[in-house]
Image (cartoon, rainbow, N blue to C red):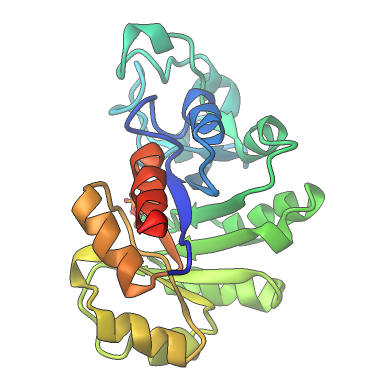
Length: 246
Ligand code: G3P
Ligand code: MG
């Protein structure tokens, strides 16, 4: 069995507040092969790492990321909602995350949250940052907005892209090819072994999300997926090693 790349979803987000330094450090500590994170643009054009369009769920503030300056966002606490021991975690820019990950040699999956809000220039800015940190070879850009991925490929044809989707698409490798993507990032429940085989036969990588239960991780790994996006990288790593020992 080929060992799938284990991506820590929003960092090791079962153990630390998602998309924060604590979650990314935990992912590295757990030896995740990859990290997935989500990006948006602030009012003053900084790329910030956060899942939602609004700060309400994961901070002590309220409002839209697009309406706030980085300095205002930096005043908020992004840790306490998860646990008092994480009090003081701040929002990070993509540059700050890459600084924190210096020396780590894993794969970074940057999800462009380009919808329902369309951030002007998010694709170009993200590529500029990845290039500045020498990360283009070790990155994969994904999005539910596949127009965004077309833009990414127009700017930087060599960077990998992955289409995110929820449905049980028929022959998704054909569609992936159509949008010039290298990978599919499907919601895992709709994945069956023939789809994994079809992707392999057509040279399209498959990294399903978000897979946390050991039995699901095991089934997907045995079907031969290339990567697994999970909130519990430690569990996924343990499941994969036990399969390799068998
Ligand atoms: O990239 C996989 C996954 O993160 C997609 O959905 O909503 O968790 O960002 P979401
Ligand atoms: Mg995401």
